[in-house]
Picture (tube, rainbow, N blue to C red):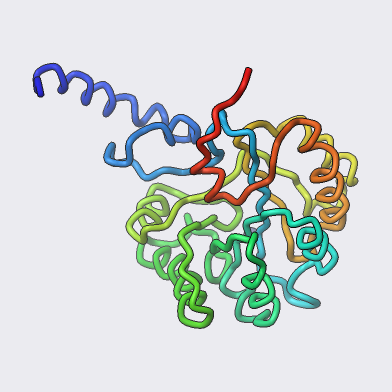
Length: 247
Ligand SMILES: [Zn+2]
């Protein structure tokens, strides 16, 4: 190997890295040994699939999840990825077990207490992130590798902690806005339809906070995604998608 030919390339790669932070799709094309943990917002743009994801942020009252929504996903066998907060898991043991039992659901974590991570120091962030991962492992025997920060908030330390814990940092590139009570089902659908494309990761909520989430998922999976030739898959499937786009 000609080292003198290699070093200018490495140097430009290092110089480029700060410019690429935030550009999820581009970051994914960089080798992990570049030294920057990845913040994933989407899968390969060549992949004719999308990941429908649901956050399970803590809820004080009522059932842990929107029962009709989960039933719809199960009836249609829609692969989905659920990001569970530790506090939600603790309060909803039966619901947690029910979701873990669905073979086409993938499970990730969403922090223990749903804290604003940038307000915490590195050690506190580590505890907040790891506690939910440990809870799923110790109580349910499930090893999870996907993490989504509460509120989508993070700083450099969050990214580093997630990396050292061996987790993948999963955000989104399509916001449904489903917990917003001022948005109608049609408005949410229009927004998702405009934004969704190959490799998209779409964020919804399954904890009953989204009044129209079930209706939106119904029309999205029955109409919009098929019309666009996009197949729902889990986040892990999306990130490993090797499909090559046809013109
Ligand atoms: Zn949340």
